[in-house]
Length: 318
Image 1 (tube, rainbow, N blue to C red):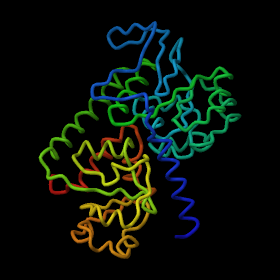
Image 2: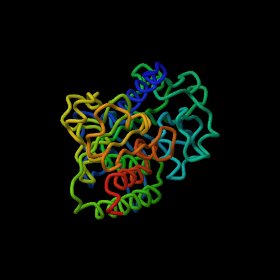
Image 3: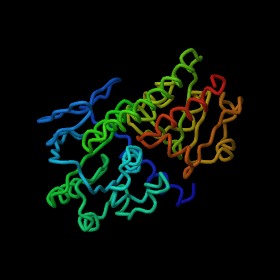
Image 4: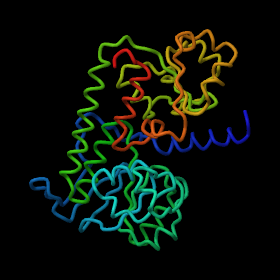
């Protein structure tokens, strides 16, 4: 494997780990309500300030009023903010926040693993929406500058819905948040209805170099929702590297790659014996495509990502 590709895959694994890591002490279940709130009164879907919310790290953050200026350092958070009509409040973004198109016009404040603290402080936001990989020293520097930090890292789609509702309450835009959540739930229900009686298929998700989405990863939770069996589900880590022998032995019915090309995979010695190869079910969802973003970003389009996976695995159901 080329050196640049190895570096790319390592970055990809780090990004996925930061984006999809679930807190061991936090679970999100269907119909989960918004995180803890204190000193809060909500009447007719209106927020009465001050409001104290608990983010996905368990941090309690109090807002005396709706924030006016925002920095988002995760593309999923950026998409949530835009979906709720808050895009005009965003003054800074990470360099992966490319959707919607309007987001690309916002000033970049660094990447997902190293936001530029000085630049963020210069922008004087009221709040930074971050993800689980934000360095603790960066978080503390921001908080010491009187900038509130909210960390989202949902472990499944229910967690995404919870975060959308939380943003709705912070900014007093519950009506918009409810509409987005309702539309997501409606589409989710339609997808799950179509696959509820399918004959379960075994699936391998190849992030690159045979790394995969293992137990407690977000992608694993999506596969479980659509009744697909993840061949990496019993691994010891969230993002294990499987051997080619293990993949062949597991004999996946569908092989989904988000890094290595389909042509490269088909040349692997022994891969011709698996059902995915025999039935032409090696599916490539290339990096940099909208479809790839949809299956990885824990924002409003994650249900579209669920549909992409469901159609790839069970095209006959659609």
